[in-house]
Image 1: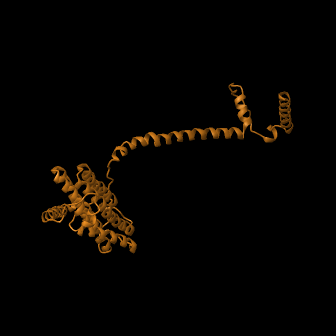
Image 2: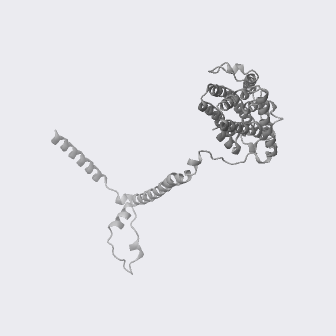
Image 3: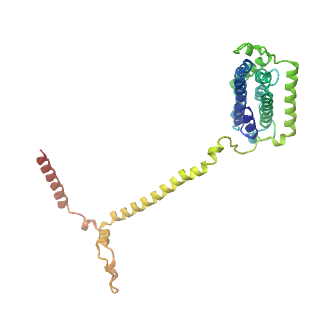
Amino acid sequence: MALYGVVFAVLENDIRRLLAYHIISQVGYMVAGVGLGTETAINGTTAHAFSHILYKGLLFMGAGAVLYSTQRSKLTELGGLARAMPLALSLYMIGAFSISGFPLFSGFVSKSLVIHAAELRHQDAIALLLYLASIGTFLHTGLKLPYFTWFGPQRGLKPAPIPWNMYAAMALTAAINIAIGVYPKLLYDLLPFPVSYRPYTTAHVIETLQLLIGTGLGFWLLIGKLGGKSSITLDFDWFYRKPARLLFRLTAVALNQFFTAAETIVLRRARALANICVDPVAFASRMLAPRTERKANEPPEARAPIRYDANRHRVSAGITILVVLSSFVALLAWSLFLT
């Protein structure tokens, strides 16, 4: 999970989907901690779940501020917002530093607990993969997204002002992320098991800074290839998007063709019935006329169809009254015999 989310974040163009993929990645750390099962690992899982809610909420608020202000959420449509939205950029970067595990930020004291638990159990492969996921997180959440959103090419956007309460929520969350990073005891005292781990050792800080600085240099060298592309990235939805075209043909297209054919047939029958009702005498004469060949010398007037004349062909009122009275007498007799 930790690597899966990072890989798909590489391909993502929408800033909200990019951050959502990193939720999968960060939950992967927690699943790895649960799988290790030691007290240190469970502490790391709990601490990371707590800090993840904080910094990921801050990141989504930063992305939401961009969306609110510009009505854009794709990297290919954003850029050049640093001057217009410097405070949103600063607060977002606190969340980016936190999720990337920078020293003095919350992610540094929570993610490292899970990796430390893997190292204590001599699970070097797990520790290496989690370090790799951490590099990918900083590459895309800490570098790619802010660069192509607030810097990068100018798009001529005119961002609208951001309400103060959006900034207030981001500032409060940023302050908590910094407080946990500067004073880990605030978080460690809430964990289920006693914590003896010290995140701020010289070796750990230098090791973390080496990874982050190396990632930053790699981003600078590959910056031309890391920009977003205006496309749809298929994830698990590949399994139902690919067959969807055939399913669409078998359902929507086939049903539409069936209903169109049925409608055509019904309309033809309705028009034929309407023609019959308009001139029932002519229709009856055609149906009842003997099928004999016309004489060659027969005048055209003899071939003309009989036209319906309401005054001539309608049923007289006497016949109608006779039918009604006969029906009434029949029903009355029926009821008498039944009783």
